[in-house]
Every structure is written in structure tokens, then in C-alpha cells.
Length: 179
Image (tube, helix red, strand yellow):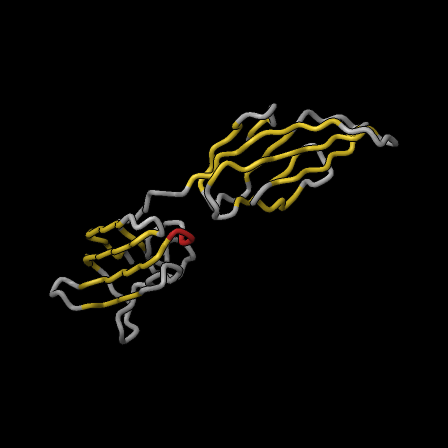
């Protein structure tokens, strides 16, 4: 949550951040109109607070709010900036539970797909056989082998990513399926 300031960076968020809240002091005698650069206002337009979903475009983004007194054509403008940063980190969980309860049923890295140039996820069993492969960063593994059997135990995960800035990320990790 951020208080809208005067032409300063008021917040730093990761690209793709959902439900970021920004506000100004509320005055029931004012009408508020917001403008957001490269973000989507999902609620609050016309009020003293808005919720924004930031796009996947990194950079310094401008937020403006115009406050008009009821029945007046004059307005006051507040201006601030938000630093939207490319999400550098990739989080790779070490276990998951594909038991159909709706919690941790799928495995895959948590990352910002907007900055991915190439992607490869491979899961191997303890004998080195490939159990799962994907080149789609939006796909997650359901914990089943190619025959559709739900697996249990420890597996090797190989992750290769090349980002749009040509930075390469390689991870080799043991993961545990718990049923």
C-alpha cells in the first residue's frame, strides 16, 4: 500500500504484480480521476484509492490523480512514480502434493514468463529416465508419468531458462512428491 506523493518514486514492484493499492487522502467533496502508465486499474477509478495490476513492462511508471471539487472545472493534480522491476529470481519448490486437494497439486518454477526467451523443464527418475518434459513456462507437471500413473518419491529436476536480456538461469534440484 502506498500513499501517493509528489513526483517521487513511491513504490517498487515486480513486473506482473497484481492488486497493488495506491491512495490519496479522501475528501467526499472531490471527484478523483486516475491515470496509470502501463498498468491496469482494476478497481477504484473515481474514488480516492485504486487497485492496479502492473504489466510485464519494467521501468519507471507514472501515476497521476486529478481531484476536482464537485461542480467545478478546476482540478488539482498529484503525480508520483512506481519503479516496476523485472523479476530476476526464479523460485523452484522442493516438493509438491499432487493428491487432488487443490493445494500444491502441480510442480513448476515460479517466475515471470514475460521475460523468457527460451525455457526447458525436465524431470528424471532415479534411474535417469525422463518422466516429464516441457518447453512451455506456463505448463506445470501434475506428478504423473507418461502412462498417467501418479508417482511418489524423489526426482531430479533440470531447469534451463534464457531471459530476453540473454541472462541464463540453470538449476538442478531434487524434488519430492508427497501423496
